[in-house]
Image (cartoon, rainbow, N blue to C red):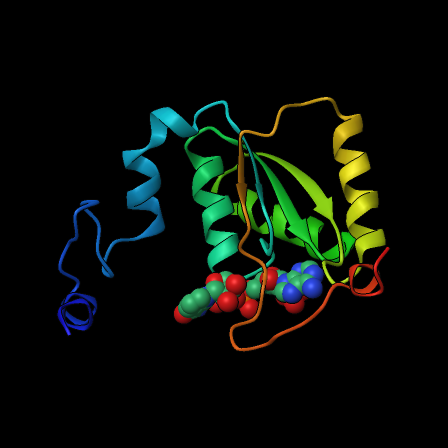
Length: 139
Ligand SMILES: NC(=O)c1ccc[n+]([C@@H]2O[C@H](COP(=O)([O-])OP(=O)(O)OC[C@H]3O[C@@H](n4cnc5c(N)ncnc54)[C@H](OP(=O)(O)O)[C@@H]3O)[C@@H](O)[C@H]2O)c1
């Protein structure tokens, strides 16, 4: 009941943020920790993921922008650059229901020889259960 009330009123919790806080406000508060970090945001082509990618890039992180295909990732990078022109963005392309596609994307990332400091596993659809293809088959 208390949490529902806090959600509805936007009251701040122990973190100092509440439902009325924006991603930008949170990222600004942690800007020192985001700067020069390498972050991968899955599901960055829309919604919460896109905004998380945008604000992290705004505060100096290098962000790998995940999209399910090249067009989704590149379009997202273009959109983010409209508000953060100097954003350090790289595409990360993977269809997350396919283990083969994930492996291809990971191999490509590893070949770039950069560290991964932060992984934001955001991709998904609320209320939709699914299985990764090859994983489900046991390979
Ligand atoms: N919004 C809310 O109120 C809320 C509340 C609780 C939890 N969440 C969770 O927060 C996350 C983001 O929510 P959102 O509202 O921002 O959702 P959204 O706008 O639907 O974004 C989800 C993103 O994940 C990507 N995605 C989904 N399945 C994928 C797959 N198999 N392979 C590659 N990409 C995939 C989508 O790509 P495409 O656009 O190409 O499909 C999309 O970019 C989700 O995990 C959701 O369950 C959201």
